[in-house]
Image (tube, rainbow, N blue to C red):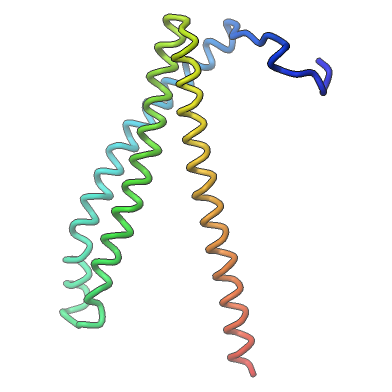
Length: 149
């Protein structure tokens, strides 16, 4: 195949090997989604008790008063993001399984859209994480420079 050939005009088809691979991907995707649902519920549950745990750990010191609420909010945001990723993964897996069983193009396209959303959200999270790391590195270097002078 030429490197500049347009893949859409090449009439790509799902052959038996691709069919088996997609079926296995859907199976593993469903497993990961179910585990993700359970873990996001556990993270949300931990968020409910984070404030109490922080208060107990601080010994009732007021300096940590708002920290428990902040930790709870962070946990809830993480749980919500993880739930959304798991939901898109579950939709991908179920739609892909249906598409492969019924050779339905609409389910196949919807399945791939949901997989795209998983990767898009994950990519955005990685970009945010790298930006925070870069900012932390800059702040650390600047603090070290000012501390040594």
